[in-house]
Image (spheres, rainbow, N blue to C red):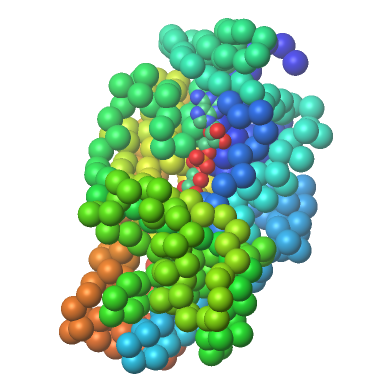
Length: 404
Ligand SMILES: Cc1cc2nc3c(=O)[nH]c(=O)nc-3n(C[C@H](O)[C@H](O)[C@H](O)COP(=O)(O)OP(=O)(O)OC[C@H]3O[C@@H](n4cnc5c(N)ncnc54)[C@H](O)[C@@H]3O)c2cc1C
């Protein structure tokens, strides 16, 4: 392959990988650059929503089949109130007429990137380079020149478009002078995995649970490997990371959830900052942002990576038109910005902020009203379907596609 590419992508997270396979599968030559020596393995997204599964299925190459074989199908999810022991159970078969995949697939995001990179390696118009960090760029009306740092030194690579899928700390976004508007919460989220079988001690436990409690809410999710518990911390303790990550603190929080005999076996533990931010624009000239590089939100509801996959699909279709049909890029990228950015501001940010407020409310009246609303919604098939269409991101993809 010549040292010039129609599309250069920086960052082999789920969004960069999805976009690379989308383009390569339509014969658009693509270079995917990843700064790490291998695909990162971290405890982040574990839920794939129905529209993302459809988009991945449409990529072909058997990726969806492998994901379904590896992952756990969560065909219902629950909101549990530990004060009253009420469980609002949302049955996803209610949206069977709305999607080919009426469930959430529980699978670690790094399993998805592994499957995609495996396919990219076999395609002649895709090249993936690890240990290759994008450190800067220049652009003109005709194209981009990208500085890539690797163990071989710094190289200049030219291309038609540069897409940053570098995640929230995107160097390219910063260098392009694009503001990341929004805020960071004062508290952090602790994510812990354990092999303890919660399904044996909680009655009728589904694979995805939002648990409210008079003292401390949490989310319990089963991935294909382990149970994972997401626990909020307080702003006052956020600076004391050593304590929050200590065995003592984690054992105390897990015993608060279920007071078992002896210690829990702990797999991974990670502390995350929680942000709500959207970039002021998703492109400037020939430099484009997608995924966490241009929007980030708290993980309640699992909309971050999913929204990023929807960006990649939307952008991929436009880049194919630009590169293969010679269509003008400016109007199509403006449309990408309208379709994806407005949605991130109005749908994803609003939903995730509301989800967090609802979960963390501590006064009894708000907790009672919340559970009553969830119980009533889950038992009314019409309301439950509407609720699921929103939470499964089906409505937001439909709305985004309808934007001119
Ligand atoms: C605890 C937690 C749980 C979550 N759960 C969910 C969930 O269930 N569902 C969901 O939808 N979302 C979830 N999210 C959010 C999700 O993890 C992110 O939205 C997702 O990882 C974003 O993907 P991305 O590809 O945009 O960026 P990333 O996954 O951050 O990938 C960026 C990649 O770019 C590379 N990179 C960075 N800079 C450069 C550079 N200059 N040059 C080359 N490479 C570079 C990085 O090494 C990395 O591989 C969760 C997040 C957290 C913290």
